[in-house]
Image 1: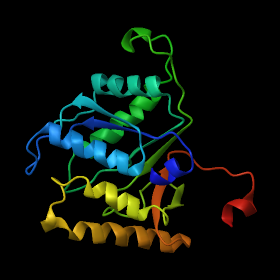
Image 2: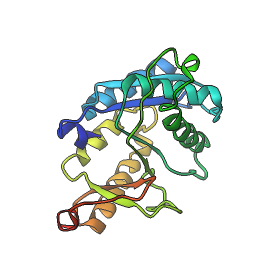
Image 3: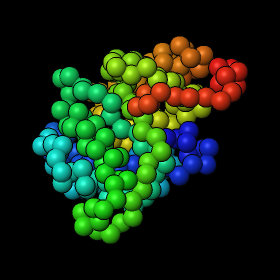
Length: 214
């Protein structure tokens, strides 16, 4: 996201929940302030938090419509979201993936205006999945993995994560080394100092083979 901002793209973040309750947070106001600080560190000017329940997030019609409304409102060309289950971590991640998949579809559906407050339909051009830094490097069942060079913005990424002080207290300082290490490993495989791996939900096509591979 920091790289996209530097390249002049308009970038927004939609949080499905406020993340509460969590053990070290005094309340949702603190988590909201942390998320806004992280967005500012990345250069992201739009960050929305939906009123969906943390720990009890489920893929259903209402959650799909809630996210699709945001897509129709902000009209993104590319949507990036979770791409797999995260065993031994929050099951909300898997539900979020399914909600996002459906909302991308709902965003473009016509003859259903009564569910979307009159917001115009919006076809999203591309949907990408990402993995968390500690998850496997590839997502099963998808062939179109690619690595984005984040060499120039890795420190910015880490600075944004440090904004979540309630989630990463001093006792978890090792997390930052792991995130840096994962980025360096992903980048090295693609010839970068640091990288992030994404998956396209559809096969990627190119028109200039030499420009792409070089």
